[in-house]
Length: 118
Image (cartoon, rainbow, N blue to C red; front, side, top):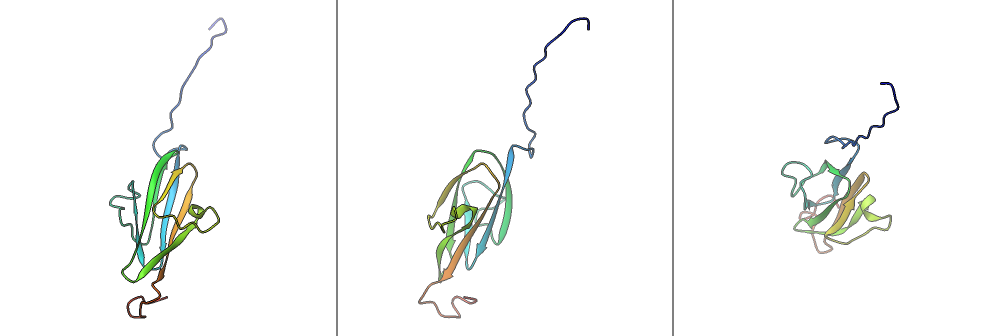
């Protein structure tokens, strides 16, 4: 090379690279969680806790479904915006790592047998 040259390059992130963010879902109480996009294979009705990776900017909807003798109370974690959001279903666009906790409580008329652990 005997003279100055210029070069342009475009890079796209690899799957799982820096353009992906995690979503952690968990449940407190008796209920289940579903999402508009699979958090893990077969994640609709995701029991307990699960984690998924999403491309930044992915829009999704989370649905908290109370058990037979419980009520949905609120979202915890970063889904609550610090104020205990009770919007259900919860719609969001994920741009940063998020942790969403669906909080359920026993129905006031439920017996200890119908709703144990409350």
